[in-house]
Image 1 (tube, helix red, strand yellow):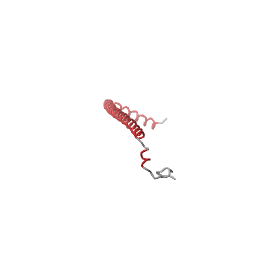
Image 2 (cartoon, helix red, strand yellow):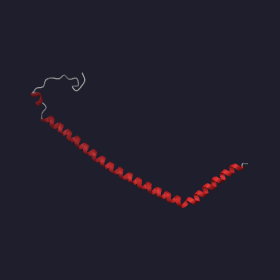
Image 3 (cartoon, helix red, strand yellow):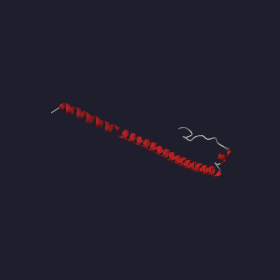
Length: 102
């Protein structure tokens, strides 16, 4: 039989059976719950630390990307005229060399 009883038959309980679950069992359960709580607190601290480190890394990457884009933009504006002229001149030569043929 399956279900909440896990195949165990239900027996009528008496007050004596309830007393059999004594202070030692409650103390053991309480100790286990304290250990679980301590582990969960430790995990939460580690999670908070990792979250803070990831936020720092993300901000660092954003800053590096912005600096790179600014530097790239400055390089493009400084050399933009020369590079564009060379590019178009080379493309122009290539087109007309192909058209000239052998």
